[in-house]
Length: 179
Ligand code: IMP
Image 1 (cartoon, rainbow, N blue to C red):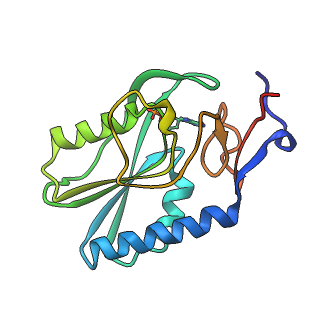
Image 2: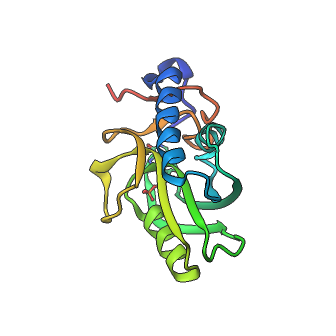
């Protein structure tokens, strides 16, 4: 499939809807952590817009880390295998860890990350927060602790999510109608 025309992308979640929901999630996280220090881990590249907007609302002492994983080969389908492109992290023993993802689809990436955390660190807490949750596609038993919106089995783009590297910069989340 060629690059999609932005005009063909239908809005699923508007910028306003996304931002309002992010504020709601931030309120919950502020209440959860109170003033405890948090290590926020943004999963590149897709979660970067969400992470930045979310973290701007958080009030506790916070450090931000980035890791880069990939599971998508080309186009619309997952390769079914998670690759750790860059997963160098500081010592997270005894820390509150907040993992920030763009979308949980099959759940393989989330499971990989949770297993990685458990194998490498004894954190004080590990919370998984995803902007989107595509529950219908799940192939693992993993569930996010917090998520913004449930989406059905559509390939979505925008606000960090890409199709072949494009459309991350859209302010909204949309999909390409198949008919
Ligand atoms: P999972 O391992 O199958 O849960 O997939 C997680 C990753 O696949 C996400 O972090 C996204 O980068 C990518 N992904 C899954 N579904 C979509 C989608 O609908 N649009 C864009 N990227 C997606």
